[in-house]
Image (cartoon, rainbow, N blue to C red; front, side):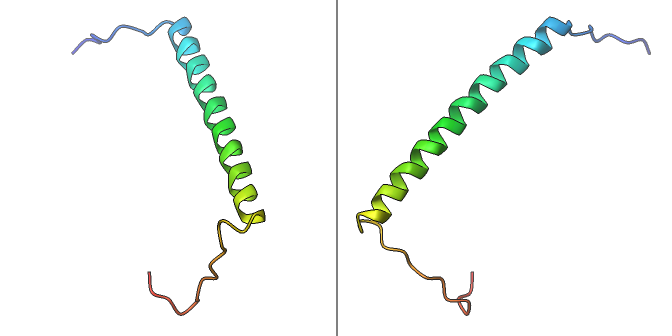
Length: 58
């Protein structure tokens, strides 16, 4: 049984990694924006905090 798989060139891995890093950066920016929006809503009283009852069942 010989190896039939071709070796993937390093450049391909680097390109995939670069694309993944871009997506990660985009997601981090979006999460930061959502955090800011939530903070603003909390400050304005538009998003009331609900205290979790420890006796609640999930």
